[in-house]
Length: 266
Image 1 (cartoon, rainbow, N blue to C red):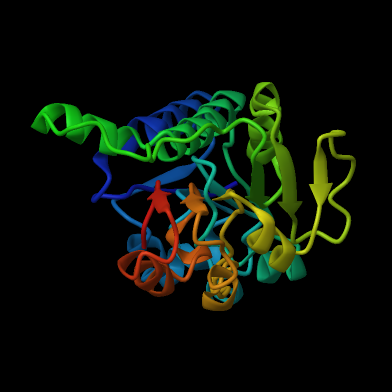
Image 2 (image 1 turned 180 degrees about the horizontal axis):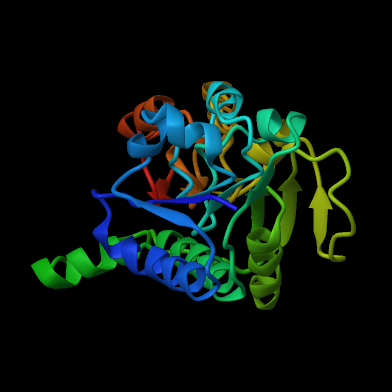
């Protein structure tokens, strides 16, 4: 077996993850190439001809053209949860395995972050903190609200969304979910699967948790964003490519929604 381990110089904090992979490969006596970046693989025809597994991160451009140039490639692996650089459809069509390293800890952390940001926006923590720091009088009416009983829309239904829905139970919220899968499987009794248009129209809080797909257009388009209520809050913990960021910027600058929080931008 020939394995290419591709680092990302711009993200040195991720290198320890690859360090564990390198150590395991060495201990298992599996031939591997420690490369400074993915270009060192893609620009080397000899290596491309023999590589069987490419290991790195989800930003690696694993496209149909790359797969065709690597006839012995059996798998591409992301050491984190993201696989947005991987053309999963092209890989599947060629019998190439796509794997990632999503972990329960990561999923729980992201679900907690989603709930934290919802509460942050709804309770206007930034506004309250600024008012206290500047000694401003107490505003009336109070912009802070309660999450209790609101409608929360989750765009994407996977492990993180399911955990987010479970964490939201104590707030008695109504949860609408949009999934790109035709059959998302069983959902909890407090969750309703619905088309994206309805979710955007009816939700008080929208949270995007869907995975990104290489080369795919945004899941949440300008038209979808235009359906939000003026009182709605919009959050995205997904990759920047899943949302029409230019349209969201316009929406916020025109104060057509109550607020937004983004974990990742393009």
